[in-house]
Image: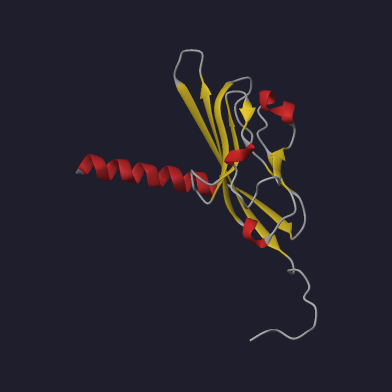
Length: 147
């Protein structure tokens, strides 16, 4: 029981440290924003993902086996996310651009990179970005509304 408690505390400390180091990005409705993620250079990438609000299922971006998988993207962002520079991953830049911001895009994004090390063991890197979205919503036309 003590070992489980100790492991839980270590995970909370790690999460707290990661969240304290998260980037803050602000954008306005309709703008494009870059979510920055600098990771390992010249590493063999096994898996590279961006997710929102710690969900490991709602992918914002999914890359595996030397290709991206747009079909894995959550419907709310499909077609609105791309790598900032496709060739930059080898230099350690795993940043993405989110196009045409909406209010529902606000939240915390996690960049996760799993690498294959030359010795055979996997390495893992995570980076957190908190996105705030401001601005007015679409203008409404004057007129009657149905009750």
